[in-house]
Image (cartoon, rainbow, N blue to C red):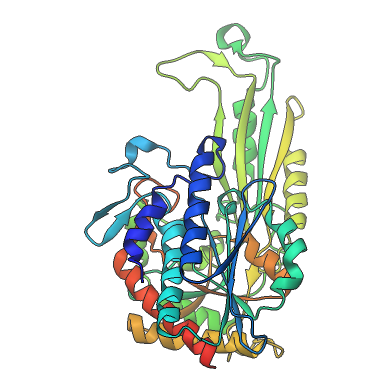
Length: 457
């Protein structure tokens, strides 16, 4: 059995930033590392080429009578910028206290290593384990998984032979309270570029005779929310799925401290839509956010200029029943109607993702045709997590998005069991990302138990 912490360090040293072609060698290194590790524990490994970064398919077990679990993960990471804010180099992993620091430590190399190590231990102990396992590991998750739909179309029939997808790319609220994620928000993203004059202008000579593109962008942004924080787009909330009573109870069981959360965020007060609690707002309500805005001079000092162009980057997080195409059309229509006629504009479409919900077994709205293996997997996870972490898991929707989970459901019919393994303080997508090594150790023990229970059903 390999040392999972040392292997995770080795994994992090490969700077696998999928969105930047400058990191091609790091992507290849992470790919080679992962395929080599899976081959070393007895898996037959296939590297599926895509238009961008390959997808790894690694399998063991062929008996069709055995349950079949697909374990999903991704080997790509976010850019590490701004580099000067890291306390240690982003791709030179360092242990400080009970944390391993490095880009990708929590998203998703650490959680993926948890499951690889759990499988390695389980197969070392039970080499004839009656369980088919397929690792499906992609290299484009951090850029919206553009190759995944085509991959699913080509490999869908093979994937349909499985019983469920198992993964850890979601949140746990504290070291001893695991959440089994039963919903993910969808996405609609776009850029809006506004053009005023044909070139930048001297603000003294030409100010006062034309609308500044920055003003047009600011007015648009200000119009997209109501005073109560709700999204001001007609029809935006029409298809939002109501929150079930059992979900409300699970949110209450979370027992989260709103004041501690406020201090963690570093804000004077919460600003939530329709009077929702902060924990409802981040899990079961849709949002519209501004992810970037710019225009004009950005350097030191002043430059009295009216810019030719200004831009804003928008994202909508969608909840169950909301359709990305519908929300995109509503958003674009609203932008077009509210844009001043004395500027021109362009909406640049970015990627989308469909929201996803799965209902755990034994709930009032559990689908009657739910797979027995899936139901068994949820129950196995419940028991294993309670035994290892000391508390039973909570079943909650999460505010983040993993768009391929909904794609998998739509194209193969497979549902997912999602075990949260990263913490809020792990700094995903930010400087000083880290992974809690105590969570890693407990996660490996729990994952081993879960997979063994599915096999022994």
